[in-house]
Length: 194
Image (cartoon, rainbow, N blue to C red):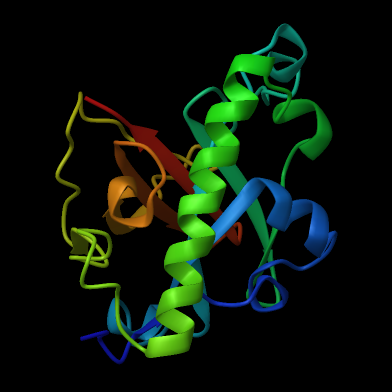
């Protein structure tokens, strides 16, 4: 059962503020979460996205000086409730040929899961995918590696929103952590794997 504050598999047009096709090529919209469930003064939604970082030298050139974008963290400006990646999409997502094949398999698994859910209104009972939509919402993050503190570009600590296991969406193995900076209107998704 999907909680009322979650929108599962939102359309890319509902998630990305600009360059919708380019964003959707690299980021898989898993779910949107109503911010009022965490803070009654907040409005709008944040979006949990699956992603696979680039692994080439060129990709590393897209990292940002403020540390919000690196090999395990991506950041987005929030524009009218939608995301805009804070670095160069084409550069950050450059991957080697061996990783291209892996990424294509992940994308296919994700698309099959999304298609089945949209058609039937529930997860495919023949898989363990979507056995849980998220690991937690709010509170303190349950880290699977070392604890991290996420700050916006001005050094303000960002609010933890949600944690989800990527394997439930066919996207590898690891946990994705969504953070929100209300003052700067920025969202950060951090990935950890065991």
